[in-house]
Image 1 (spheres, one colour):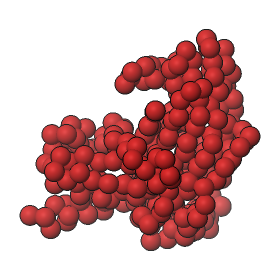
Image 2 (cartoon, helix red, strand yellow):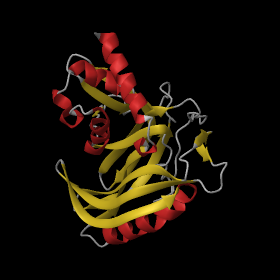
Image 3 (tube, helix red, strand yellow):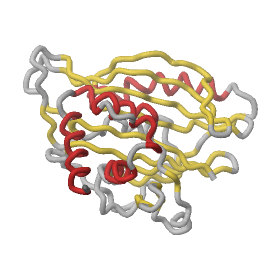
Image 4 (cartoon, one colour):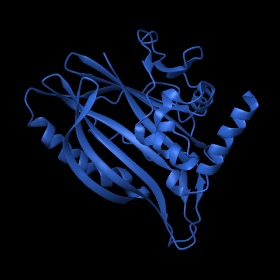
Length: 274
């Protein structure tokens, strides 16, 4: 039975590989807080090719276009939310965009600036300060993030391995959009994740690897943003980093690595607030 489940999940991964629309990111960027409520920028993008023959190669974590007519692009929505209890409340829809992968950070910067301009006008605004970032680049041996499974209860956790944070586990909640992608491909009700076969849940979680953890200070709160991803790593050459980054006084958009998604892959962010 176990082997059948693993094979089933392998088939899921194979079916994702049939279309570049499976390259997907769901990214969250804390900007600050208003009256104690967290303000986050949500970036939800699909990666695709603008090319007549739909051919693409990934080399060293980047895309190498041998045909100048081929463009690797991202399209999707950018929205500003405030988090109230367990709900995300829309503050401003910044619209739909379609941008080149090679111009990713530069193209996103105006959206970050616009969202920040809205945020600072909100009552009792306190700006988020990015204190540390650990970059794993999908390496499961990475020391910044630990992913654990409670097999008995089919619960999944992430935690930072840094001293003082090891015991502060965060439940991994797959974004609805991420599960919808799987459901669209498999026709299995993955959006009702808690009610599908428990072994499916466990083997599905094992497909994911750590990408980044970012730690913010916002007023009296600490917020960690975990990123995990999955996909074809056969041509991916970026390596995990050995030390924490301490960005200090960087601009709000300097860490936008949302386009670092594996070939035919997905990545998504989830928050831990304490």
